[in-house]
Amino acid sequence: MSMRKSHAIAQLMLYVFIVLFLVISLFPFFWILVTSFKPEAEVMGAGAFRIIAENPTVQNYVTVIAERGMLMSIKNSFIVSGVCMLYVVAVASMSAYIISRFNFRGKALLMGLILSVSMFPQMIVVGPLFNMYYNLGILNSYWITLAYSTITLPSAVWIMVTHFKQVPLALEEAAKIDGCTIWGTLWRIIFPLAAPGVATTAIMTFIAAWNEYLLSYTMNIDYNYQTVPVRIGYLRTQFTIFWSEISAATIVVTIPTLIIVLIFQKQIVAGIVNGAVKE
Image 1 (cartoon, rainbow, N blue to C red):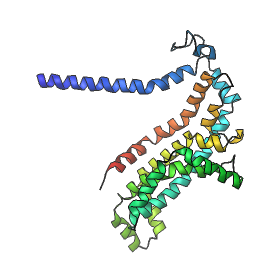
Image 2: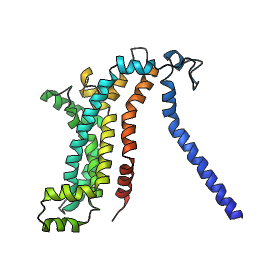
Image 3: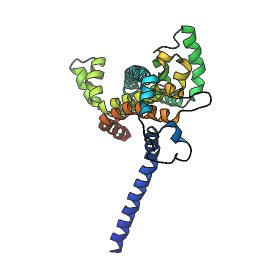
Image 4: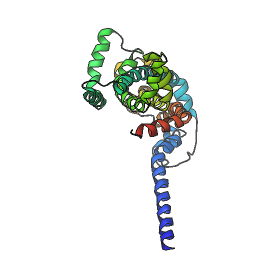
């Protein structure tokens, strides 16, 4: 009985810990949601800690959508993130296939170099990229998607190499015997079997590009090409920060990525779990 009681107490403590962890993790998002319905006058002052505003309003959402150009920024973010996702998945898949299937001198060094590139502070590459884009005359354009690959491609290669290694080599040999080319093997054999890893890579790349701020702020200052994080940063004046509008804009721009994660959550979980298994 004492062991059962100890086990029950341990389970109860675990549940309490999980609940507390979830509350602490979700509270910032909950407070942003609450603040988005508050008038600017109630964000600060005596009523700042009220969960329900005295005068709740949806005017903040109307303002950021109709007057602050948030819909244009969302469109720009979708274009930039979508193109970046397609480009990175295509390049990473070919690179990962070569690294996972062919043995060559310096292979371990190459993987280490790819990993080290992903660890570089982003500020290091902003200057050279800005100068290159300025000399090419492609600042304030959707060409920024190529610059995003500096922060998304290394991790994409690492994820896809792990998943491609789990595809049995015998399947490729059988495909070659049947007359399938290398490209055919990649698209008909490797990609379908490594689908969870490909989906995980695509979604993580999309979200990383969607949330990217520094490159977009530096290279796309034109209003017509500003992405969501940059546009949110402009919800202020010289002396005032519009916290209610920022909260409303945060909720609006979080919805697309939240929907994507909810739709593809099975693929994401499968990709992470399969990638954690070592042969």
